[in-house]
Image (cartoon, rainbow, N blue to C red; front, side):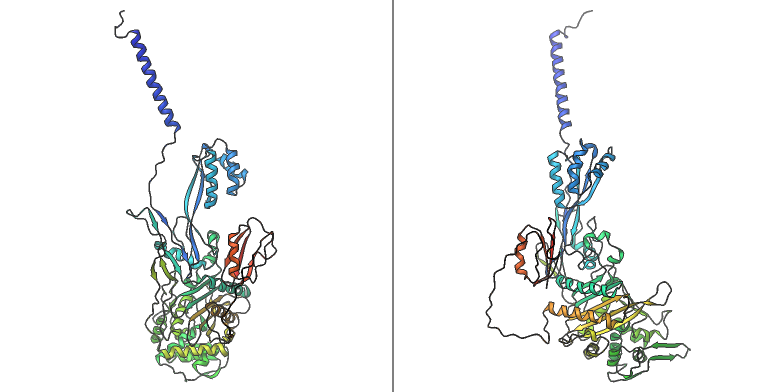
Length: 626
């Protein structure tokens, strides 16, 4: 056999050398690619900076933050024990439980070991991962979050933001598009939401919530509502619905704690409604201020069709005027007044106050209540006099407050609002609330007369326990049986006790309204809600700096001496801060012995924990100032 001359020995060696070199190059290249991390494919998507919710003075009520879910790939970890030992403490997990979770998840692509850790914990864990080379085994999924610095304060107003970054209730829900604008295809890389300033005064809200909680405990009631609004602007300064929930623990709250009663709940108000009924009678000319009506304890009437109407009164009031009827809350006199007005005209006038219509407040799920029509199948000869005394009609607390603004403003109602202004992230004001007055529904003389009657109620009538003495106040109380939704009719044990007030009478500034539901024991409104109105009104007057009749007058030479701040030393126990002014407390903010939280302005009136409590690394001292 003859060998081809081309395949000579030297040439074969050269070809083998080239082939070996090429093979080595391929092995090196593929090996290098195998060892180097594959580039992460990223897409640039816009980030949304959610706007804050603040009170009218700029106090933060809802602040954006980031939370993270910790995801681990057990198969990518060589030493599960070492990983569990490093991560257990920062995650506040049991070492054995974490190790068991990782071991059981071997073979899985990933496992969530902790959800919603805060930014500080994330940074600690990220550092541990970087140090130990666990970056490829651990993933931190960022989720938008919210911090609610004031916990329960005005919780139903502020609302709650869910895990997906969408508001689920309150202002967080209704102002979602302002707080977090939707992402569009042409959106910039960073989208900034607007800041929403509420009309709520957080410091006043705090004071009134304390009064409300004390009243709830004292009466052993199921729930309580309290609203304070500026009569001339419709701006709500305080909005309380109890029970409430800590917004930072919203997912653990009960439905009862989440419920926004002033907006969503409708009920029969009882005798409080008589101020709107008599205003309607007077303004229509059906009755006059000096007309008199005889109350002998029971109103009885039989119609031509044979229908019998019976409405009882608590007392025998004798001959009384409209003023007396409000003073004594006389059912019989109201029923007699109702005879003098046509049903359709009466119902029409009631609706002008806003009953049977939503107020348009910036909260979800608002009820419109209900005012019957004469064509309703449940309408009867009894309906008109019964509505006149606050039954066979359902209202919301917000409607009662808005209706009262008409009496406070000379017959002109003003729309209620919870939003003071809206600004950009840079602080540029893009919206400022301007009062929205509705058409006049009462003569000025009628409104002033009703207001003077309410002052009589406070001075010598059923609302005398709300009387302030040193500043004029008009009130009207009411106690109503609640509907029995199980057996039908009215409950014999469950009552609504409510009271509305307007002050000062000569120049109304505030409408204040309270509702207590299902109180235990005493339920008469004059005894359980009127005193709370008096206490709350007094706090509002002092907080707003309104002039009081018995305020002391002092002469002063105009020279004052300001003493230097005495140094506050925190050692091993909590000091007694009672009586210290706010300026003396500012030095505490620069120390790192413990966390300090200051609520309110003025001087320290109370604190938690109490003086003498041993200090630990996690102690948080909360101070309340007035």
